[in-house]
Amino acid sequence: QVQLVQSGAELRKPGASVKVSCKTSGYTFNTFGTAWVRQAPGQGLEWMGWVTNSNGDAAYARKFQGRVTMTTDTSTSTVYMELRGLRSNDTAVYYCARRNYYDSSDFWGQGTLVTVSS
Amino acid sequence: DIQMTQSPSSLSASIGDRVIVTCRASQDIRKYLNWYQQTPGKAPKLLIYATSTLQSGVPSRFSGNGNGTGFSLTISDLQPEDFATYFCQQSFTMPLTFGAGTKVEI
Image (cartoon, rainbow over the protein chains, first blue to last red):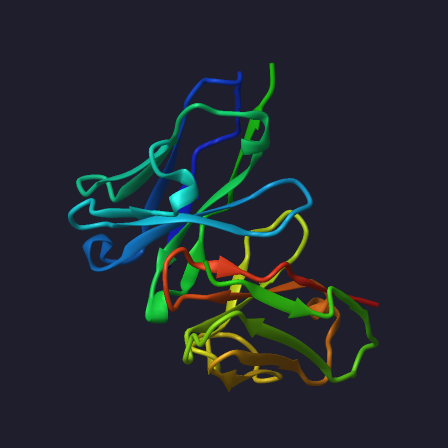
């Protein structure tokens, strides 16, 4: 069955970086892409960008350009999202999700809580 | 960026009710509209993509409609497991954007 399993919760200080992993299984990794979506506490969903699993081509929301990098490792079917220059309002649950028909996200990871606090 | 406006922000309903959630896009997004369901502490779950195509495994009491800028999600015969927050998402152009959500409560 399709699974996306994310790395565990992280605590970072303002200005630091965080790298979240998303290990996939149950489907042909190179056939799909992966999106990253975040959700601040009690808030809605925010799309950050996506990456083509086969070649690592990525596109980011303008808001995150220059601070985020999404990469893939085809040997382990794992996707990574690194966010730099963390601020307190980056505190959120970060989700990876498989990109599918009409660019919807049909399978999601369990989420990774990133807390930014001094 | 395309703004997605959902209404209502919350609603109260009972088991067996028919519930309609609407979503309006700030510009034409053709049929590139997706619906997700989220329960507390869980990841969103895809219900419907491309306005009206039911994701595999989703009960047929969920249905979607619309085109262009106006869309709706209908839940007929509301079940206990349907009490959740529902989000629309446009996937017509980047950045993909979500509505603010509609919380369906008892």
